[in-house]
Length: 347
Image 1 (spheres, rainbow, N blue to C red):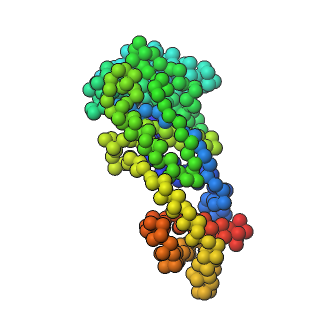
Image 2 (image 1 turned 90 degrees about the horizontal axis):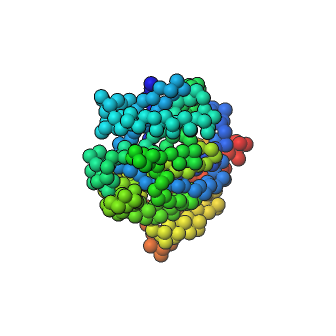
Image 3 (image 1 turned 30 degrees about the vertical axis):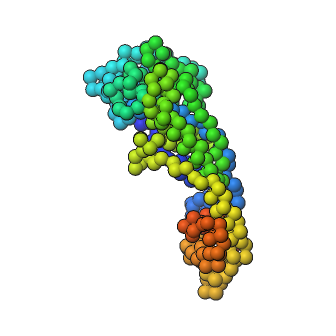
């Protein structure tokens, strides 16, 4: 028996960074550093959102020898040394969980692997402040992890269609796919435009938990977990409502779409080829320097400062301030600069 933790679910901004990097990854240079092709536009990825339940992360595992154990988020638990009564519950339903895992192994041609069914153990007495805490205790399956015997082979999670039928409602074992879910297409070239929809759905769930409502219990929900796939890699992030936000997982602030459009129009207008070439000349050529990665900061500062100096009237006319546009100016200028460097060294 060996505890295997459920992978932490991060924030939206981390997924944005990782997918952009995956889209533009072009191999390694001679020093082992990642080469990024900044001319590649990030993709549009479809994400599915399922209800995030406010309980305690739990799991039932079985190895190739048929040995079964129960987990909390951080430990193996037993009916004698339990976590909110989950091990007692799981042990009482051990034959059901064994049948689930054997079915998973048969359908996916697994032999020596360990299978862990992860879910949320939730209900009365486990947490406070949400609709489901007024319901009898139940286990809601939300993922299945496969651990190969070979340590050199990475662990992985099964696609939802491999486990979304598993449930035993008579014994309070449910499946998160049995409850309402959401879909959204996120354009990772403009991911900020998805924030309004993500925030709207989160607010909807927080106002009335769909899982609680399915059991005729009205009350607030915690948030939504979003899952998508790109280039064979699964990406997840969670969005919580304000009542459940912590310093680790912040709520997504809605964005002003009209203002964002103004910002992008301004950047297209101000960050021109001529201005960028002028920056190269002023920062590098006049100082007898060769453009390099080490000079990126100086290059970007020149571009930003020149735009603020020369285009302040345009900013005012568009009701914008330097702090509104500086980040976007830097992004476009950096992409152009890196592309130029790559061409100079023949990459």
